[in-house]
Length: 360
Ligand SMILES: *Cc1c(COP(=O)(O)O)cnc(C)c1O
Image 1 (cartoon, protein in one colour):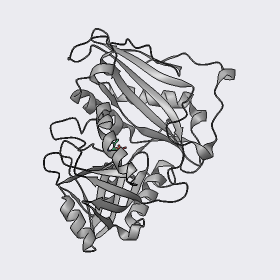
Image 2: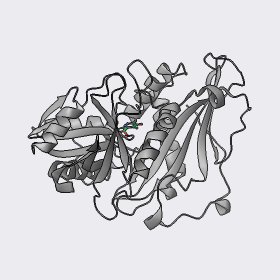
Image 3: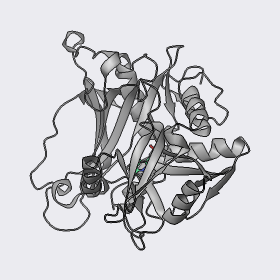
Image 4: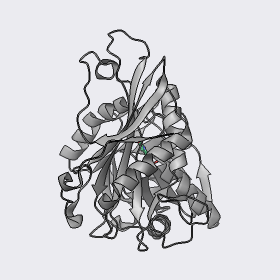
């Protein structure tokens, strides 16, 4: 794939933000990637251009019928200054699965990774070095064809934007308070819950706003049919350490198949921990919390890697997990995964891809 580069003049580049207060998704880099699709030409004209607005027709399908999917991954700068990507091939595969589900065009996995590589290389000065910081990569596809009517669009834009993000735990782990909702649901089996598609997040806003008003950080979602089985926490997958067994809901069709989830399962199995992917009911979670068998609970996702849960609130009752403190396994998993991402630990599973490729 030949990527055309239409870059800014060196003296027009944006000043870099302070690495100690980057936040998340606030600053955007100087350039972006863009490639167009039409049913006639397929994917064409890949280019890196100056970061800026899209020209979209007000009738663009994405604005009315929500054909939109995205991915999220990060570029990490190691102490050796080299920039690493973590399992980008998995993002490529998942983008294609989301595309399939939303009747959108798929793309070549290697082209997806090549586009990320080239863009991050162009923007390498934006990859921060401070411990725990990274450059968040947001690839996405939207339906751009101007057409009112419900059928798959014939034109799409694939784009990648980049935003430097701060350390999630600059002041140490902070176990979160979770509200278990049995009123709202995120996704139903047969629906689009396992696709990373825009509408899922719009659908989740009401529940999380309600939870926040009540003083909670995140919502724990139950299954749509029975409000009985645990699904996810906020926009993360969820894990429970019950006695010595690590339990996470099986991928049932309504759960997003997280890459961090898969990494946690792989590492835990490798460490000899008993792991179960199975339906887990909210009653089982609450009973094991009450009887002292629930040792740990944490969410997993690219943004935070591991997010320890300190308490769960369900049907008017609050249940503390591990005395509201971060558990040993959560800490160990966090250290191992971030260690691999920043090149401080051995990449035993071949998860790292270097952006510059040399020596990889
Ligand atoms: C992206 C996402 C996750 C986490 O996936 P990772 O690949 O681990 O970042 C989990 N749940 C939802 C709903 C998500 O959108």
